Length: 105
Image (cartoon, rainbow, N blue to C red; front, side, top):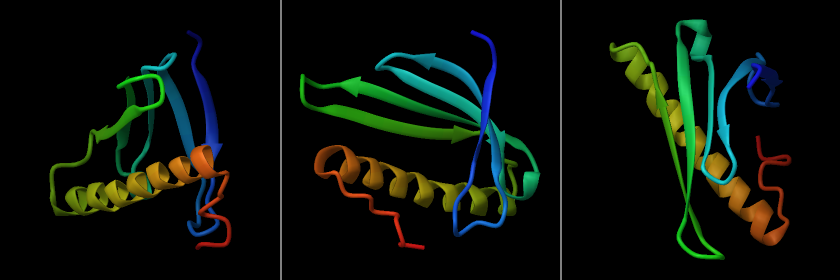
């Protein structure tokens, strides 16, 4: 798979993030790398999809590669909250056609 990359931007954050796709397996995995807060290190995000049945899927998100110090720990917790917001937003959009983040921040 040739490397693919794109930029993510948010209204509430001052900089865009360059995202590098590393793996993509239909209905199973999306893995990418991007720079952590303030560009201090690259982290790897893995979004795993585990179908329970025809109508339900467990989504698990992990992010690794943080600096093992107080700042890295804080930033990893900040991102954890962000990934929770992503999951809630995707569920609202996919199941109810509601765009939760529009005008939220």
